[in-house]
Image (cartoon, rainbow, N blue to C red):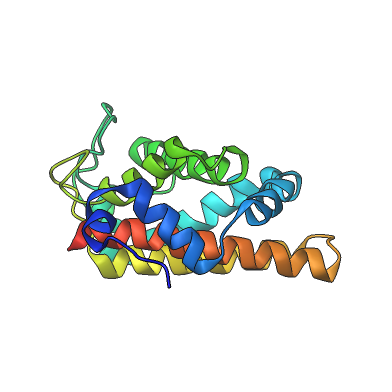
Length: 189
């Protein structure tokens, strides 16, 4: 039986990641499957981002989080929900972030810097980092990850992969999103 230092799980993101990856079974073969899928999903990232933001903008509970100034954005602010559209500069700024997120998932080494990145993705949606006005409720983050997971599964299913490779890639993305989910949820405690 492995001995796990539960205090370290809460204090050290790298230790937490290693535990989760080991427990879930996310390893080098999963990373390789995700990275091998890059040629199939890379050209579709803009479409996935647009689809995600169409969904986010279709509910007031998610769209309202794009009215306050986003960390790093210094352009014109929307005055209200009615001022928001897919073409608003602040929405474009956020779309660029999601585009980079997808690129990180498929193209980055899964090393200590990636663990820090996954942790920051969770933290920036709370007042603990970025804009103090940004406090996305946990339910909205869960909804977002659910949409992203579904889109990735569909993208893999539609890709010209052998059934075994498709299953391996879907499982790899699923494991990764569960790890990402944990790195989001830890900032809501």
